[in-house]
Structures are given as C-alpha cells and as structure tokens.
Amino acid sequence: MSMISPISTPPPYSRTGHPLALPGGREQAPLPESPEERELVAAFADAREASDVGRIVSLLTEDAWVTMPPSPLEYQGHEAIAAFFGRRGSSSTAARQRQLA
Image (tube, rainbow, N blue to C red):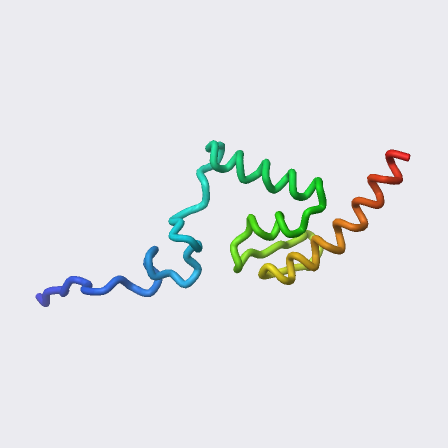
C-alpha cells in the first residue's frame, strides 16, 4: 500500500488563494440577518432611492454582477453597473416625479 503525501501548498481553489476571493481581506459576505448585512442593505436601499449611482457602485466589489431575471441582461464590474443604474435612475426619478405631481 502506498502512502499519500500531505499537501504542502494550498490548492488553487482554497479560500485564501481563490481568484474570486472578496477584496479587502474579507473572508465572506455578512451573515444573513446580521447587523452588518442590515447596514449594507440599508445603505444600498438609500443610495438606490436617491439614484446615487456613485454610492451604489461603492458598495459593490469590482467583480460584482447585476442580473435582471427573467430578462437575459447581465452587467459585470463597476463601469457597466454604473451605466445600468445611471440609465435606470434617471427614468425612475422621472416616474416618481410624475407620481408626486
């Protein structure tokens, strides 16, 4: 019977070496229902309600994706997501203004 040697280096898909690891040394997203998650969701909702694209994008990782199921639309990265929310923000702000008038 042959002996299996121990792994001396972490595999490429390990948490620390994963190419999709979260930026800033974060190991994982906030836990569901945690104060951190509530704070992040509230900040995103406030930025979205204000149509503040800069604040929306600042809350996302650089490799973030925005999808709109069932539509096949997909946006990846700050620039594409900012363009998407910029277009949506101007139309939703106009719609809100019409509703208030």
